[in-house]
Length: 277
Ligand SMILES: [Zn+2]
Ligand SMILES: [Zn+2]
Image (cartoon, rainbow, N blue to C red; front, side, top):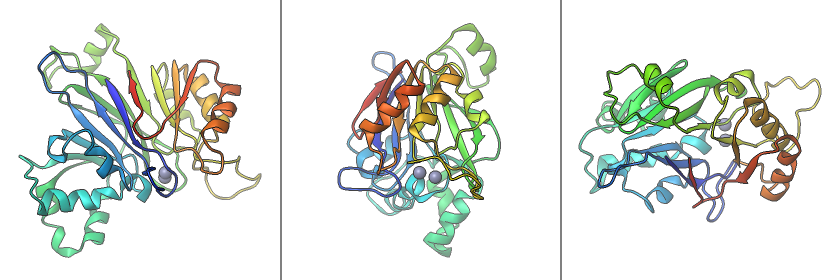
């Protein structure tokens, strides 16, 4: 399985730095086509995605939450798939929070509402769940992100011999496959730590520059880099990749902070980086 970083910027894009987005691809046996999933569609990531594949080659899109720095390029992806020379063979499966497509319809206008299902095959995420997409097994679980419904993603290469109807749990027990976990945006929470247990690569946001002030009324929304390191340690992750790092902190300082609480392999994501899992 391969993760290509399309963008990481928070909370707005900068030149050569799109917002959050990744291309997740399965291993493919010789001659076979890899399964490709666009994970988060932050502004600027649709353009970066096309360095690697065409939109019509996507097998699915997965959106962690509806904040614009993770989802806004879905709007122009709709234009591309509906009005351009691109001709998708079938609607692209789109996994996202339950209200995602309704909100897109509000933004795009009433005329788009009956057209959206011709472009996206929407699969609403309301609780923990899982799905097989081609050569990938995806699973997700709710995580804490202020007052916004948000999900973390887990992914493994699928068992080659497993049919979609095969019980996933049974095959996962039979062969341990490297697992990637992506936090989406998340405050430190037991849900994420449990979900990320034993991850081979934990892609974890570090969007908070500092701890919330004591007595703050708003629910926590992000990890500091130090908290990200601690969460990865609690989860027993083998590798930690920091992403969506607070702009005022920067990658170098974030890595130094995370190394205080996480002693294993540590890196920072940047556009164009590729991580093999
Ligand atoms: Zn964000
Ligand atoms: Zn967010």
